[in-house]
Length: 175
Image (cartoon, rainbow, N blue to C red; front, side):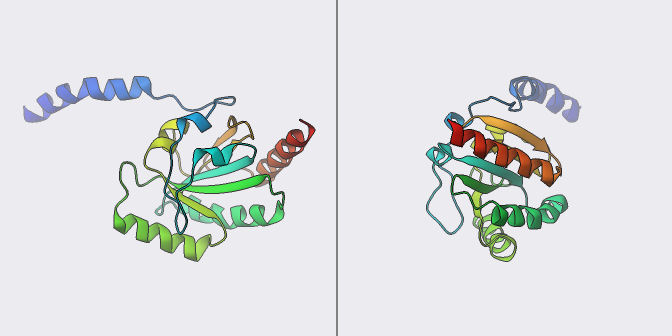
């Protein structure tokens, strides 16, 4: 009986959360939905960092096998695109709310071992809410105007990702 009462009481809350959830789509202005975010081994990252740059964001967790397999390709992509207007951010989404010291230590170790040259942020919820993350990894390409260009859920074709990044950088030059 207690289980039934608990389910009945939680149903309205779950329905509100479900009905208000909306994944980001191309053209959505993401920069205005974000807040100052902790960056591993650096000052807090500020949303204005998206303005004027083409930014590829990977949403990941430390326990995600596909995220770990994708990371060497992301490292290689960052090395191959030398354009100063290109940025790559790895956003860990395990720390919704207030990340624990244990999580921060785990993410710091992950960065040191797997992505020492990349910026690693720890989401407190703003990134997850802005994009509507449901699958790990998820990649988001954000244009220099702070708007979403493309969202990939799961492991994308990295050649297609690179082509779209380069196309976005070339388009920004023409503006």
